Image 1 (tube, helix red, strand yellow):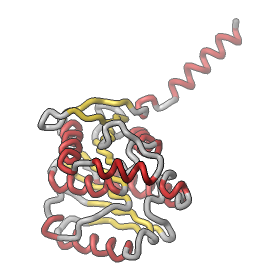
Image 2: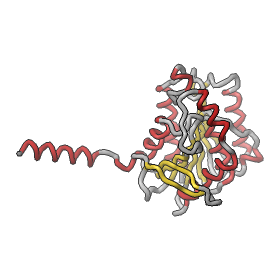
Image 3: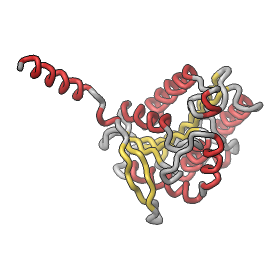
Image 4: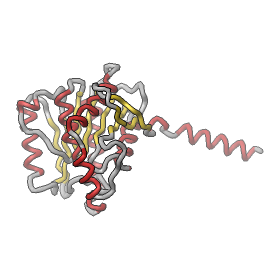
Length: 245
């Protein structure tokens, strides 16, 4: 009897120690045009700051939900949008087909809807995009003054100072040095354009890392770099702590 009681007590203590708020839960949200879409929520509902995530071309992969949980454990309220309507890819062929099905206008309205949901209480919001999601995240940041910080992992950037003046806060860009032939040059151009726009950009080029180095599904895992991924997370978490206010 006593051993059973001790076991139950230990189990309760273990459960109490778990960061239950970091689990993701699927929510149905509405765009400003009343179009329903799914986002995966993590973190405390009364968090001081929020983060909207935009996935890469694989969709809501384990990497993506783990990203939401990781930020939720940091105390942010996270909404990870699903631009694929529940479909998920595990190969490049599947991902390419899903990517082609995305309507940029609808994707923009869905991301804007997630931003509006998090900003309702007046808290500052960041957007964070991975690969194809970086393009959508940056576009959303340019449209929404509620976005106070932008995090882009190995994605398409805008290097026009006139357009970047629309940002309401700084940006972080993280890429691999082997991400195409001009990764370093494009990163430098983005940094200079952000400076000229009066919105500083922090840029980090990880030596030897390829495109999508943090996604185990990319290139069937051949270019997955867990060390670079961990460095990118440390940079991103530090950036959000300093800049999201």
